[in-house]
Length: 114
Image (cartoon, rainbow, N blue to C red; front, side, top):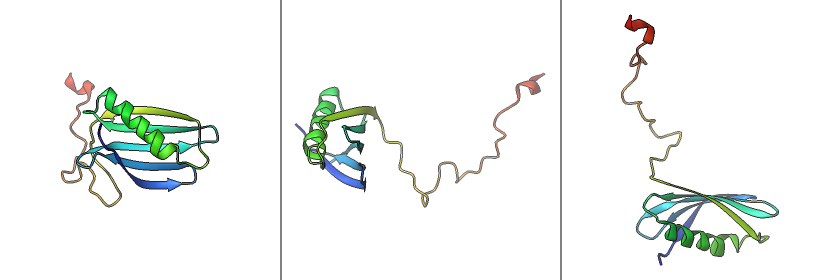
């Protein structure tokens, strides 16, 4: 079984965000929101993780993060998204397409084909 590492990125009184890796590779991230009756999580994992690995990861989240929450919530509801990382964007990073200005003339009007 893989050893998962969770690095907290953000925390509020009712939510936490973590990046997840196995010591060598980035595996994804999780955003957790704590309510009075349950913990709701959105787990985004790399497309290479199979269902068995995802279930093991959910168990680790429950045991290491949810169980240590104060107060402890009995229910954990996880929505899982599986795909590939496309990028990380911030205010100070260049946006896609800024290097080559697009004037928007790439599309033709259907009416112009007469």
